[in-house]
Image 1 (spheres, rainbow, N blue to C red):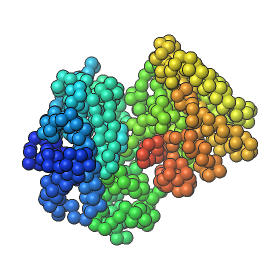
Image 2 (image 1 turned 180 degrees about the vertical axis):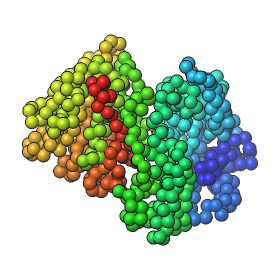
Image 3 (image 1 turned 60 degrees about the vertical axis):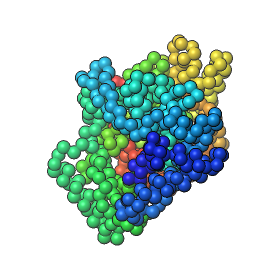
Image 4 (image 1 turned 90 degrees about the horizontal axis):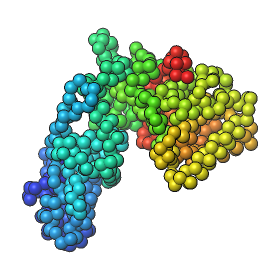
Length: 586
């Protein structure tokens, strides 16, 4: 409701209705930017916020903190609009002229028909664009997407890019910019040119085709979501009973909750959405998970979190299923001329893939942790399989370090190896890192001669065969750093150098360990291996070391994981690669 009221406030301020828009208060204010901002804040409260809160008083009772955040966001919105109007009015135009010139559309419904080669039929997409602004200096249009609060940044951008695509196609003006404005309640603005969102829009069109079931790969991709769909009435009934037991157990301890929508069923757990009754706090729910665990009789306690403003409670599924990597393969890229750096980290609760991209700073290097039985080695195999299927030896080379001599037998002799599988008992692993450092410096020297900054620019500049991306994977990092103090220092120094510089050269580190303790994962490692995958660990402290969150101690094992690069950890399920599929790839 507050999000809707926020959008209504923006539409009223920028719309044509002279009774409630921003023209009159600005005309009456002193001619300076600060006075304009103050005038708009006062106008917002008198004409928009106060009447809206009065209308919905009964619905908002008990939500004081949310209302205060909404009011803070409205004040920031008013300040943003005041600065925009002041800046555009410096050429001597009146507030009424600026409003008419800049704010072209507000809350405008739009509908387009998408069609791609190979689709069985077109797809109609409908939506409502928050606003379209026109830049007076050159007349360029800009689609604006407003957000109250912050959701997943990539989800916000995807939605905004979809609206830009819809407006561009509906009006026949492809050269339209995009702005994503979030007030959470602090303002945050991201602007994109039309060229910067072309790839995102291409993927969105492909996604629309898959969701509508008209794209050729839609049928092949179906097995990914079978783990979460509940066609079996008896099974769905068991899950409903589990929800009732869960909420009854919390009620026994004075924590009263109501269902907040339908549960989501993942491969290994069920996510229930809960709405707390008044005076029930999230920390109060978390404090009773161990007591509720006894009532549920599951192998791990429920995991409580706040996801996009809703309380979620993840409970072990009584009938878990596996996710086969083979079923994900239709969604993976085919080998490309310049290689592919993306791979799926796992499958989300809604059946979608959670992706990482080694070419991005936040995903350039990985730290992976998990105890015996957590699925750590299987996750490494799935990562490698996904990268291999999307690359050739010309675009991807592997450096595999195997202290326990059991993890990478299947890869021996592979054409994708940069050097034979490394067994630290047979050779000095610091020499391997030294060789990677030398390769990194050699590449940077070549980039400097060409006048380019990174691997992608080098490939584009040369227009010839690609320079392969190198991924170095170590299955048990603890065995390397616990040998002796001198070796630890040498390795940590080499990791720090590679971690800080190697991404742009196309060299990446993936270190895994069963022992994510402070004597293994020290500050240098945590800082330079920016992407974290936490499978089940033995202690909350170990989870805290990896992802700054205790939740990995209550994961269910067998590929159940928390992935963290930017923002809060995301729970995913790692797929399982069978030996035949891996052997065929290698």
